Image (cartoon, rainbow, N blue to C red):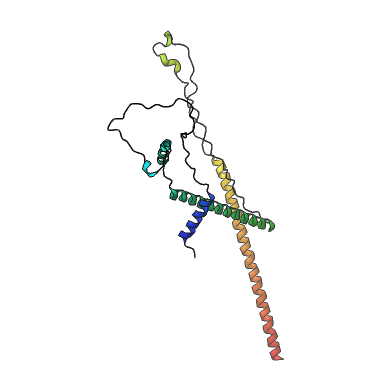
Length: 243
């Protein structure tokens, strides 16, 4: 039996085979043997201060390195290291999420198929399948803002002697509309509905009572028939015994 760790490593190796190789950093310099266009940079006499943080390049690790490849080495060392474990974890998580998504889709399809079969059987038996409430999938639209209680601000003219004491008088809003009294409950409608409900309950109770009486009458009739049959059988046995 293959262990989970070996299976995961095998799966990761298979995924790594399918993935394209990582991009190779390209040099951003011009080789020295090719002619360069533009002015040639000249050396300058400015020297850095003695406390300048100098970080030498690991040129000694690369024997036979050309002088114009220092920029390439610097750029290669500036790139962040590739975390292959994190990349492998991302691939495994993506594959796992994809499997869960496919499993959920298969379960949803199976549930829909079972529901359709059950509805078809109910229709074949002459029964109406229960109606599923329609749940809209559209996002809920925000309610429009409530209109202001006060009406539009009316303009009463420019500031003049008539409203000099109160310059903002012409900005006064319209008076608020009167508040209406709360609606009174409709007792008549409630009484009518209650009477209908009471009549329906009484009719249901009467139907149950009639069914019970009919069942009792049938049981009494069957009991009398059985008793009469037993009496006739006993009488025949008595006659046979006497004969």
